[in-house]
Amino acid sequence: MNDIFCKLKKIFLSETFGGILLIISTIFALFVQNGFFSEHYRNLLNLKVGFSVGEFELNKPFLLWINDGLISIFFFAIGLELKKEFLHGDFKNPKNIILPFIAALGGILVPALFFTLINIGDVYTLKGWAIPTATDTAFALAILMMCGKHIPSSLKFFLLSLAIFDDVGAILIIAIFYTTELSIFAFTVAAITIFIMFILNILKITRKSFYFICSLILWISVLKSGVYATLAGIITAFFIPMATKEGKPFLEEIYESLKFWLTFVILPLFAFANAGVNLSNIDLKAIFSGVSIGIFFGLFIGKQLGVFVFSYFAIKFKLANLPQGSNLKQLYGVCILTGIGFTMSLFIDGLAYEVSDIFHYADNLAILIASFCSGIWGFIYLRFFANRA
Image (cartoon, rainbow, N blue to C red; front, side):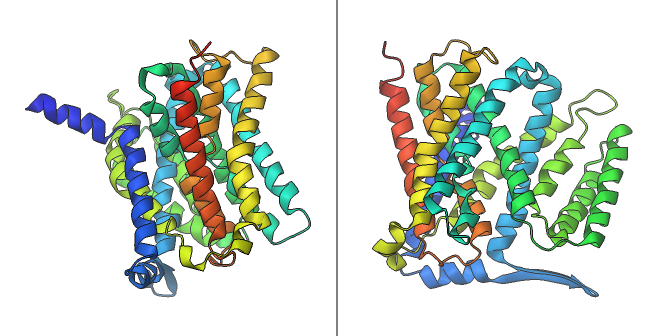
């Protein structure tokens, strides 16, 4: 009985199951948005939730609590993973960082170029240049895992590493290009909080409550500063000690405790809140607009092209090595999967075009179609063509 429970637990917490759950959440969101419950769905997402203490007030729609709050926990987990890899994992060897870093760079520059060239001349639509630069880590990894033993494990590490750099790139893009009004007072509070966490880290203090309070203050101050609050998640992660004074794993314990919430709550809820595209309001003009075309070609063509070409030349000029036990065909197959923008692209889309129906939801639909095409084609290619001579 215990063996069965352990196997089920392993399946439920795997990247594959997480990807399947995201697909279910997406389909459910589309069904609810375009069915009898559409009004209730929109009312729920627009419901104002908040609190006030004296003159301080924090009052946001439920959708923004998900996009600014819950998704910060996802970036916190990414930050924990990144720190662990740099200090004790494969990133400790600089040679292992080069290929995924260069690949991630290509996966940002080329899709952005595709979108920019298609929408050049229109200042407003160009605000969405970063939409096709993102990769949904959970989805891409889930599909790669579905390919089973046909793909060497080194390519999973390559995709994971690339996704980490991709997420860091997304955070920097959000912080630099999608920040408007800045608050010096909020920045000061954030800086003091960061300094306190630095001291806690130096002293190897591992009281979770201390870090929770600091992270909450940091999140609120970053949110109020004008910079998007997701940045607080990854900053906090860098100050979490690897181990207690007694040598017991601390960072790993926190990371493992988050897996359940990320798999079953945070990412599915994020997908449900953002994937509800109103299909009834989409018209042909919007589908073939520069924004939709830029997103589709940026994600489905630009993303895989940028990642593969940059990787190929990095290997050709001996800046990096091909992942162990893999070939260029398999590497290209993984590059196709990076076109699954989904949740991250939807998130950036919401930042770029604050009015959700400005393009009659065709921009959201383009993200879903491009992600779907990248996932299906990536799986078919890896499963049936990548291992052929």
